[in-house]
Length: 154
Image 1 (cartoon, rainbow, N blue to C red):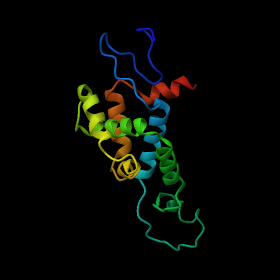
Image 2 (image 1 turned 135 degrees about the vertical axis):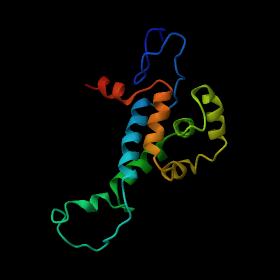
Image 3 (image 1 turned 90 degrees about the vertical axis):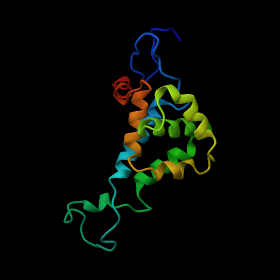
């Protein structure tokens, strides 16, 4: 790839500051950021048998966290479809976004993430509070932007 071209979703970098190549598609990261934020606003059900009309309740049941929730199903399905390298990138992005590692420590973060079992990685990520915020922060730190990904589709 020519030095003046950016990967999809990657912001133009300052000279010599190109971010690392991700194993995971930037569009997938952006999708997960959106879905993780939707999932983060869910609350425990407080009226499990409301039986009322959703419009009468101002559609508040949509914010209740249920196992049959489509947002949860989309998140789990997407995470389980990823390969080990893509899951490693997500964990490393989360850690960078959380401040556990810096951009310069990307390879170290990935190595640490690789030491975890990939079978438990989706559960680990889903159990991370503010996952969407951490993913976006790490994504941005590495020079990527969901705004750029969205603009590529318009």
